Image (cartoon, rainbow, N blue to C red; front, side):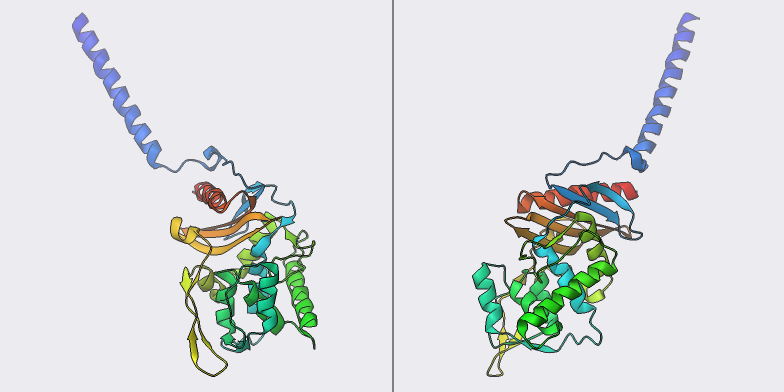
Length: 300
């Protein structure tokens, strides 16, 4: 009798254990509820992530704090160019000595455009966004600003950048440069930059450019021959190291430190965000990956 009871108890315990095991297994396969996802810690001083589909906030760390943006400014440069009416991406721009002198004077990142070459607007956009060419930025500002002098055209173009920010309802963004080499009044926030990038990503041309890892431009020289430029490599390391990455833009500088505006799509969902003032190239990418993983986990 006693043996029988023990046996029954053991069998019951085993059955409970099996059932619990089944529950545990099922639990592991089911997506954890959003509130159970652990909020990541990032080195960057500012960070923001949103669901690109509806603009809802998924993460923020000093998301509304104004900071220097470095070359992430160029997202707005590209956005303004692509918003021009009757834009012809194949129209040619002759590279001026001033563009070359400017990058040398500022020790700025460049696309190594050659004075006298004719370069298409499309090529300039690749030169702007992949190697982060400040020479390409200058050429675009000079072409799409209005005025009778170069300085007037540049000022006009920067004005268009600020108007575009206002039109997006951004209260904490101001540009005083076309490329991020500011004069003390070039700033944005992680939240604002994310919204600028989300808006820019509505352009199919912009989306194509920012997810391109390498691009080789063929320009026309002064004598009319074709020059094959040295290949431009995208400075956004996430394109090679984070599955689903579709953009967007790096930035750095003495004041800005290391910045990255990033976006990725997985299972039909797009997460977009920004980290500002991280401590190194590797760290801004690590920060961005943490925030992307968190964003996707929150979306489930």
